[in-house]
Image (cartoon, rainbow, N blue to C red; front, side, top):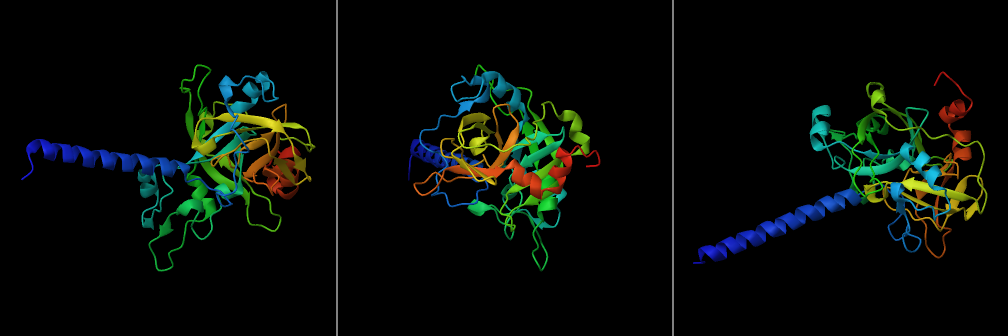
Length: 313
């Protein structure tokens, strides 16, 4: 019969293993973010030289003042916890989407969020990495559609550290009210979504809005991607455009990671010139890339009206 001390040591070992398993599961859930391509396509194009936005040193080609001015409009997209899904979706199998930090988005027009379409559009109830959306407990097992699913999203503002490396205390969690438009797996090949903040949460918005550019970037132009890589604190990476064909912007010198999807591609003034969508840092690839805002505006009825100054949005 084992002694009392051996039994206690055995219990401590078991608890340690369980704690490690739980922390590993939590870490994996943070990484389970939507992507469109196999993980073999790298999104780190060499050593990661991204910087915390409030500790940026100006060495990536964008002025420090410009980064300070543009970074506030970058927001984290995240899903609520299990309890909220359970309360709002009785009669559903809830899947495993809850509690996940998800994508990056950019606030514009005071209440609208521009992000990637694959952050919203699922395929037969699944995102990548085995992430399942809620489905009805009925014979047809129908999944919640993207327009309804988007209403569960939240944005988080100021999810970043300050110049001292301390978490910002003025973070606000704000509900999404509607999915206004999305394009993914469409004939155009564009990948974008436009969301609107919930009417009741407009007063919580404590950051500025980005401007939509009306001109294209060219090869060699300096661009920045302010993002939430791996669902973490806000960072900036910047360099020059490698190539563009008017629809797609490539940058093999700007690092992104899972969770960066949907981040705005910005010019030196901070205006939105595109949306980051894909990883592609391989020998036979042109680097990470995204859709140009000019191509999106051309397809998007909402954005074309917005750029034209339509007050009836």
